[in-house]
Length: 89
Image (tube, rainbow, N blue to C red):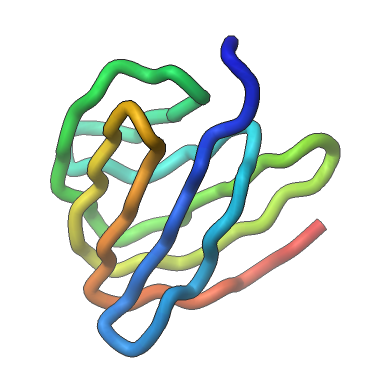
């Protein structure tokens, strides 16, 4: 693993989350997936579900409804049709 992952979660209204994290788990249309730093690039459509952001011992959970996830060499961007935070621990 190569350090932290830059993650951005964006809805049509605003940027819901942006920061450096350890891992993001998301609901792809072909199944759930996880992304760590230095992940191979890919793009996928999202289904309705939970996006879990893990950083150290903390977890934040966001509810998303549709959209796309784009993994690039610089990080992960999720463009969601709707997104809101549902839990932080």
